[in-house]
Image (cartoon, rainbow, N blue to C red; front, side, top):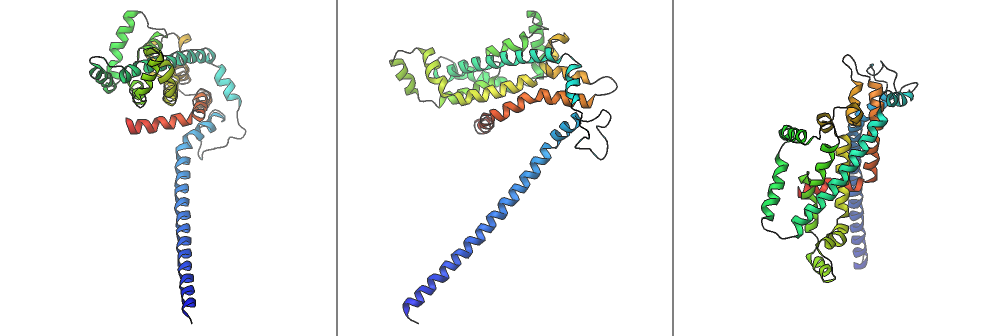
Length: 301
């Protein structure tokens, strides 16, 4: 056996060892990914189980909600529960009230938070940092501790039993978290852009409107999603400030399915799914902003 043959044989052995190692790594990676996917599927199934029960209950005959074993697929499905549940109470009026409050509050949050955050991030004025710390300090106050002072304030203003306590404060930067989040985004914009805009004739409002605001659209999307979902599902605020049934919201109206002696579970679940559907649709449409918001609040918060 000559030297060339020995060299080729050694190379062949080396290639075989490398191929064997790569195959083992490939099998390990496949097994690892299979375990991860299996755990994710199990976890997502367990998390989604209450939602499946909600859908199943909304299609059941009254009185069969808690039968054992659980009937996950009702036979026959009672689709008329949705129509009956929606028409048994003035949900059309409450839907209009909810849309009105959510739309005004979301617009107010976007406008006020962006303007205040721009001031804290891009304008130098005496006491700016101290004032910003005071704004952040309001995040530490638990909401129950301010319920009574706010109620007395709104009562003296004559705002009770109206939409004003639920909408007007949003135009004054009532949410410190939104201000903090937008300020962090404004601070990432180079100040050279401000100087270039001022050279071209922009004043401070022009810099805010034409330069800074378009560059923080992802952050505004996050605020929109958070504000919409909060105001749409808000129960405590309408419960405290609204007393006339014709001014109730959907979240408050759902409680009417609970009487003194029993709960209409099938109708409650059917209407709850209808009420929940805008939030689900919004989540899938703005999923990117929602996940980005969770990531940002986890990193910068």
